[in-house]
Length: 450
Ligand SMILES: Cc1ncc(COP(=O)(O)O)c(C=O)c1O
Image (cartoon, rainbow, N blue to C red; front, side, top):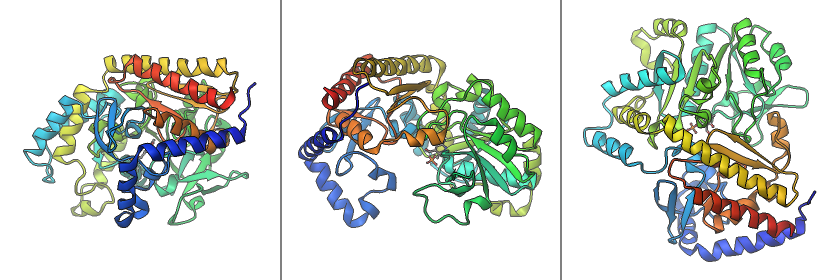
């Protein structure tokens, strides 16, 4: 097995850092100017996660490509971390959004687009009743609140190393004794997270049986495959076991498809015939406009509707002034009519397989102990063997090596997702884009081990 020599890695990284700074003078000046008015020099904290000394400023994004302030073109395998999984600036979606903008964007009254969208989400995910929020984070907060209200139980159950947005209850991991603690980096939790949350490892039904049996768990919020600590797939029988145990203990099962929509038009829920009580999906369904949806079974909806009938409905803790706006509903309708369709997934999944095969061939050629994982149109590589749960996945993260691989790619016109080594494919990517990545990946590895 080839090993990575850390001193060679440090040398190569220094070269890449210098190359990056030398070739992005305009982005560097823009980043410097931003430091005067923006917290941390960026409009959103995660924009500091990119490799290189400063984030590049983008001037235009279209299809699978974007251009930066210095005039460099890139192939985008991040796609706004799923927000633009449809591809950037898709003509049909952009025209529908522009047309709606010209007819008004928000009036706090419904439009008929909302009903079309509710029906389409019901068809894709098998749950009959839907509501909307501005982000998947909000949708997750709302379903947790509803679940606590409907069951009269205080706690939520999540997977170790999960991510469901900036939701206090879910920014957690389990410590070595299985106790819930805040995730490293999570700031300002309202209360100690063990007050609100129980945590179980992914793929561990014994732990789930134990943690759901105390009678205090309102709901279990899950991604059906972990995607946010890298892709961790469910073992055979795991999700069936989750459904059985949550039913047995009266725990509402909520599936968050915000990322796993990469599995197909109805996400992993449709692909694997899952039966959640509630479902959340955000990011990509608005074609770039901030919107998310949450759906539920008729039984839960009937009970929720009773609680949402009073004059005080505006302080229920659900909803928001701009949620379900006519603009958002037009955007979702246009997106689900024109994108995220079976024929597009057929293409993007094929491209993801080609991407994974290209990477796997180099791993083999250079005799590395690395591996590749794929879920639908999402693929990524690991500096080790594919993990079985979040803690194993977290232990395999190698920030130094990851940073190098990302910066090497960026300097050669390829953007990977800044979190782990992930590529998301849109219908606008081409086989040439994939093969270019394969070559760039091989050259990065060769620079380290040859
Ligand atoms: C599974 C999942 N749920 C929810 C969210 C939150 O989405 P947003 O940041 O758009 O609120 C994310 C964000 O990455 C996510 O991956």
